[in-house]
Amino acid sequence: MRKNEGTSKSKNPNLRTIEMLGKMAYYYDRIDDRWRTISYRKAITALKRQTDYIATREQAIGIPGIGERLASKVEEIACTNKLRRLESTVTDPNDRILLLFMGIYQVGLPTASRWIAQGHQSLEDLKAKADLTPNQKIGLDHYNDFLSRIPRSEVMAHAEIVRRACSNADAQIQLVVGGSYRRGSADCGDIDLIITKESASLEQIRTILVDTVIPQLFQDGFLQVGLATSRSRSTDRGSKWHGASALPGSQVWRRIDLLFVPWDEFGAALIYFTGNDIFNRSIRLLASRKKMRLNQHGLYGDIMRGEKRERITQGKLLEGRSEERIFDILGVPWRPPEHRIC
Ligand code: TTP
Ligand code: MG
Image 1: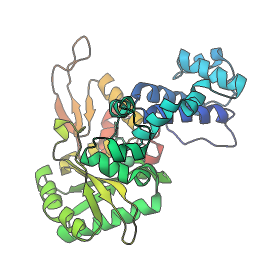
Image 2: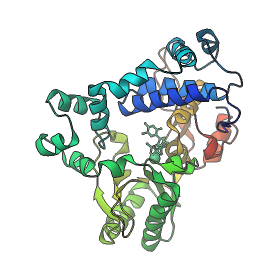
Image 3: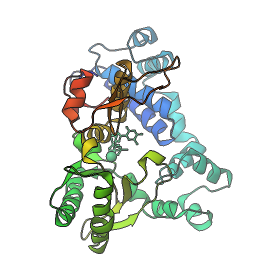
Image 4: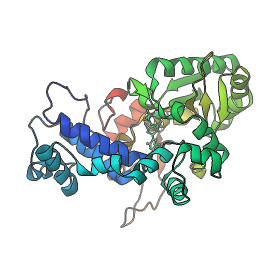
């Protein structure tokens, strides 16, 4: 929960190590290895805070956030200026094809591995021979569009079009651009739009969006396609719309998520959809240590847990509407979105 003010390039002596660990984290993220992605990202955050050059395994192990395996990698980079594991991700042909296939929107490790086992080696192979779901077909047709980062100014332009359509439908709708945009990123992987309305329920907001705004945006030629999600959990049902949008005159499709949030949950949803994901994990853990529970719907108190930390009671809602109040009740100093990078 410490403040993150980024790395000053001129000061940090571990930039080379951070850069190589960053490439490994990116690789693990792309092959859906959540745990390794998190441990690499934690180690990177820890190294960014160091003012001394970390050259040995022992030095690295002494830093909270760096475990034994990562410490050996830090030493390998310091000694050889290389990381063998990183090189193998580039040279191993199967790894290369795996990354290529997992670059397709919503394609995870099992599907990519199955395609390799079936003998497919290129995107052309998949297009010609593989059995694809409608979403995978769209992902393949827009492979480069969906993989490329979206400049901040373009995220704003997409958001403004949705904002205008929302206010035409209902002047009281409020829209906040969340995700990496709200954290101040220069470019974003997708466009996350958090949509609410004062005093409105989820049902009311969804109705305005699904019945009026979304059809209008299709008619205007802005929305290109809706993408059904297989991953969303039952609790998410009806609270999200995933799809693709394009600016007028542009052929480039961008991934856009419309997140419908009841007014009473606005603050908790802002925290969740602002992230980043590791910040979310830490703040939830902190809540749980204080016998509270935080999720995208609210902050709950009087939680009783069993021996294995399993929840016995659901608890009572302490706050959902205000982001500031949630920080306050948790006893965490207010953290502006651009400092919520772990
Ligand atoms: P994303 O859009 O996946 O992430 P992002 O906006 O931070 O980064 P990118 O530029 O690549 O789009 O999700 C939005 C927020 O939702 C994220 O910042 C935090 C939250 N989130 C989680 O907490 N856990 C998750 O597994 C995911 C997918 C999102
Ligand atoms: Mg995003």
